[in-house]
Image (cartoon, rainbow, N blue to C red; front, side, top):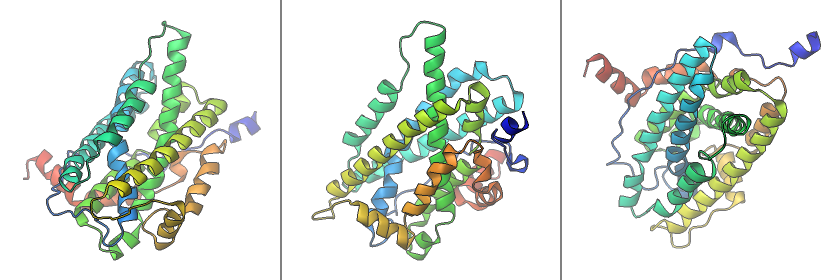
Amino acid sequence: MSNKASLRPQPAASEHTPLKARNVAFDWADTPLHWIPGDPFSTHTINVLHLLLPAGERWFVHVYKQVLPYIRAPRLREDVIGFIGQEAMHSQAHDEVLPHLKEQGLDPAPYTAQVDWLFEKLLGDRTLPPGRARRWWLLERVALIAAIEHYTAFLGDWVLNARALDAKGADPTMLDLLRWHGAEEVEHRSVAFDLFVHLDGGYRRRVRTWATAFTALVFLWQRGTRFFMANDPSLADGKASFPEFVRAGRRGTLPTTGAMARSIPQYLSRTYHPSQHGSTEQAVAYLAASPAATAAEARTTGGA
């Protein structure tokens, strides 16, 4: 009995914080195409977020609204509602970058159409009979979201600490978008996993859906980077390659391959809990200083 208990995911109790959506706004008028100066590859690798997140986070919200009636724990229900609000805002903020990219000669529509199909059709609602089949599909998607959120939290923690981006002179507005979003991903990093454990928590399902999510993310990310590099009007022969990804990781403008590799056994550990990785204190501190988040707070309280 004690051995089984020791293998259960153990959250860090001090890491919990109430969640709220911040109605941020960004002005992209002065953001250049290559917002990391002289580094189109790192710029476009990160830009893939703007392609994936609007549809992906709308899907998160859609699935979680279906899940709300099944949540029996009051605090978890409050966390999920806060998560829904934050994810809806993330989707909107990244969606608003796309017209700016189009104005600069990069029309994302061919790629985003494929992403929309993935989330709305392949992973969308299915005509299933009430009962076991319908619940199975709902739990599969809850588990997929938990796996994806492991990586959004990983990226959030990375960008909060990616000082190389500052040293390279990255555009401050884009950095604030990424760090505001990253900080909220760290802030709510436990919600998706706690919901999965609350509703199911099966280890086989966790491994299976992680494999699906990881494979899909790698495929979509490299495809998105290749799309941007090939269609960048300022590049004569823009190409994306894995060796360049490794070099960017060494420069600090992208996550390192080593850190990404270490994230795999973290999630697959039977004792894994998201609160064991990243810092809520750091995330909350950034949100208290973020230009967009503080402006949103001022508007909310009537101070602007």
